[in-house]
Length: 120
View 1 (cartoon, one colour):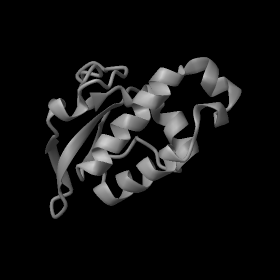
View 2 (cartoon, one colour):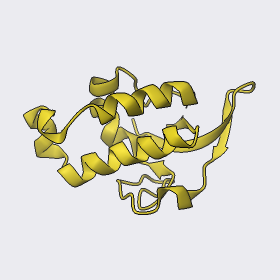
View 3 (cartoon, helix red, strand yellow):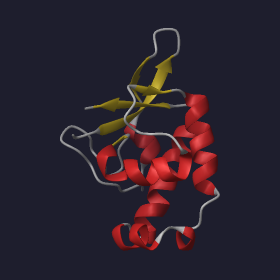
């Protein structure tokens, strides 16, 4: 099953969000999906990153909405992991540059109070 994820400005009362501005993600290049940009975008192809994110943060990207406080915890956890700490299988699949960009994407989300929406 496919998955696209979007950084969103969350209306916590309604548990919905509107897309965060792409400008905040300038210089971050990740895999895009059918409807998500990936390159300097608030949207990424979540299916590509879900297993890694779930192993490292205990949170799946397959959620309709991940609230900002959870995104912040995920970002903190990712910041604690160095590329060389990844399992060999993950290092074979993701380059250091991609892993660092993924950490940056989550950091931008956390710093700006964004949630993450999932679409599949």
